[in-house]
Length: 197
Image 1 (cartoon, helix red, strand yellow):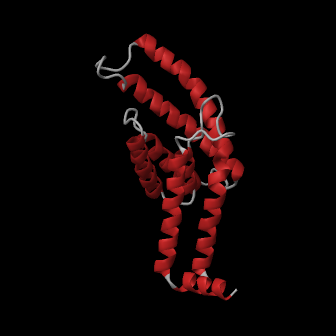
Image 2 (cartoon, rainbow, N blue to C red):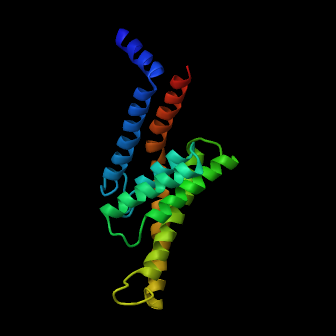
Image 3 (cartoon, one colour):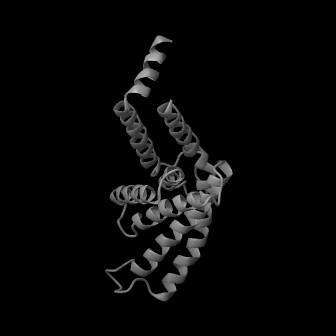
């Protein structure tokens, strides 16, 4: 009990300690999402498609942040994801748009903050990110063979697959969104509360 009191005292009286622990939580949770991204854990896959963990993290982060902070988070995680996968199509633009639009939604108070709202935001943002990736793949893909992207018949095939992939990815990501949202939201709410006492 004495140890808990001393930790609470340290938390309240030392802003440097608060920032360090919060930084560890931010980097740790984003790293966990990066590690989960290539994994296909049982129960998290629907027709071979797993949740977009980084998109869920960016939505969770951006809900209570400014547009600039949401954009920076999206750019940073997009660059890291590009480093883990192929750079074409890039993930930077899609995740940056997720951060910006989620922050703007909350600033305009279109949606309240609860599990259903977060799931709806993740659903819509996943469809947007998949569409951005498909556009990049269709118009900029296979640049070694074609100067301006894919031929029209290949582009039609890409768009046909896009609809299925986008919908499945949106459903599975929105279902798993609370797994990331709840603990991080609880942590950030608690740290704000303790920091103001």
